[in-house]
Structure formats: C-alpha cells, structure tokens
Image 1 (cartoon, rainbow, N blue to C red):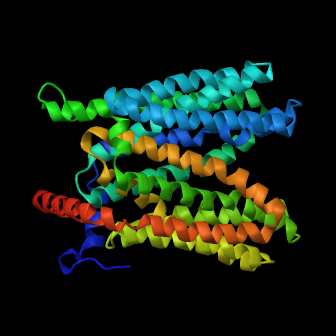
Image 2: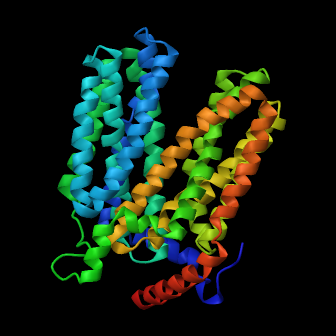
Image 3: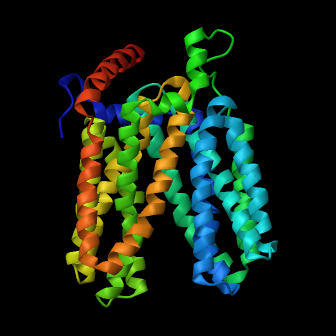
Length: 423
C-alpha cells in the first residue's frame, strides 16, 4: 500500500476524533439499523418456515429467488426516492410498508401468494438501504468523517445481526407467527426512530438551482451510468461479493466433504462474526492513512486468497486459519467500500449511486450461490480456482483505470483542499 503524505501523519488520531465528533444523524441511523437488524428474521428463516409447512426445497428456492429480484429492484427504487423524496421519508416509507407486508406472511396460504408477498418485501425492505447510506454521506464533510460514519453503521449492523440470529432461533422454536410479527415490529420501530429523530439536510437543488443542475437531476440514473469510475466500482462490487458469498456456499460444502459437521461450520462462521465485531472498527481507523483504492484492492485480494486456500485444508485448525485470512480482507474492505463511493458521488445523485451499489451487491450475492454450487458439482477444485481468479479480478478492478485515474486524482485534489479548509 502507498502511505499517505507526511502532512497526514495524524490520520489515526483524526479518525478517533471523527468518531467522537460524529453528528447525531449518524447515531440515529445507526440506532435504527441496529433495531432493524435485530429483527431481520425473514431472510434467514423463510426457507425453514416453508419446508416445515410441507413445501419442497425447490419451492423455497423459488421464493428466495423472488426475494432476490425484489431486493435488486428495491435498491434502484430506493436510490431514486432518496434523491427525490428525501432520506428521512424514504426510510419511513420502506419501514412501514415492509412491516405491514411481513406481518401478513404467517397468514398467507398458497405458495404463489407467499412468493408474491416475499418478493414485495424484497422490494420494500431494500428501499431504505440507499437512503440510509445517503443520509450518512450527507451528515459528514471529510473523508475521515465519512469512513468513521460508515464504520459505526457497520458496527451497528453486525451487533444487530448477531443478536438477531440468537433471538430468531428462540422465536422460531416457539412460533413462526411471532417470529414474523417480531420482524414487522422491529422494522416499524426503525421507521418510528427515523421519523421522530432524523431531520433531512437541505438537498442540492430547490429554487436556486441553475439550469445545468436541474438537467443533471432530471437525467438521474442516465447520468450515473455515464460515470466510468462508478461503472468500474460496480463491477468490482459484483466480483468481490461473488467471491465473499462463497463463504456460505463453498465453505459448508467443503466442511461436509472433509468429514466435519454442521456444528463445525457454525464455529467457523462464529469465528468470523466475532473477529468482525471486535476488530473491524479499529482496523477501519488504521486503514484510513492509505489510499482507498489500494486498500480495496488489498482487501479483495486477501478475501480471494483466503477463500481459495480453503480447498487445501482438511481439519478445523487449518480451516480456522483460512477464516482468519478472508475475514481480515473483509474487515479491510467492507466499511471502506461504501464510504469511498460516497466520495465519488455528485451531491444530487448520492442516493442513486448508493442504490446502484445495492443492486451490484445484491446481484453478486445472488449469482454467487447459483454459479458456485453448479461449479462445485462439476469439481470442487474448479470452484477454488475460480474464486482465486475472480478475487484477483476484483482487486484489479479496485484500482482506477488509466483513463479514469487522472480524473480521480484531480477530484481528490479539489476535495482535499476543501477538507483542509474545513478542518
């Protein structure tokens, strides 16, 4: 990695200062997402719910597929609404509609209706995602603050997910009706927190826009797709998520093939979760001193190497070592990814940029299991090689192309001067 210039030697201290000085908006959004994640049971338990009702694994897969398509659409819609309607009311709309639809799930009978409702939940539940990310971008001004804001946001997500897994297991063993009603209640609570505590900042635009700004806003996603730097970033996201999702596809298949148990797989995933909870925020502060493109490249490369090496390991100790490797890569790149995107986004398109990131993320995590499972069936070695190759590709895509590099460098000089003036 390239170290920062000498005048930035106090980056870690400034990162800690940024954490302490984060605006209330960041803490409101993080509190809301923590509440939401604690009760986000449906994506985890819908397959078990359907199979216990007597539906086949294929039918459950169809419902999951509907949810995945809905999530991609929801991110695109959410990005548009975040820029047009505002961050606050986009999140509230998402929370209220998702709560209502989720509460219906245990009372819906035919599989076709369940698939339709779950597909709609996929749409509505993701509308809030680009709006929440855009609210974080709005709340801060410097790269240091942006990285700190997304670090806190990710920390809240991880705590919520850890608690949610435990609580969801208890509720599912008692009653699926209460599981889904609990999911609805937490989503509604998220909406209430945002409605009461979050205030939208003034968005670029309004009566004082010039003609060029109004034309840019009207162009919307068309203008976003004309940004070559963004398109490269989105392709990087797809490939990186394709690789990372193999931790839930290739890893459990390999664990079974080498004679280990589902409990062993649970321990490995638990190790990953523990490391992320304890170390990700400190690591985020440490990487703040380096160029974000280089950090993303190294993080994606480490994830690819760690997961590719899994195929060579046959016991728990060695598998745990590979988990340490790819978890390190995850912690290096995950928080930085959205924060870096925030620095690339024009002010009037922040929501759309984050929405497209959500689409790319969902596409990568959706295609990954399908392709990974099919390739593993042909030959496990082929999947491990594919993971390594795509990991290298995601690292290469993290670095700016020669054509884009000059534009990015100029933009960074301008932003650095602006941030130095603010500080």
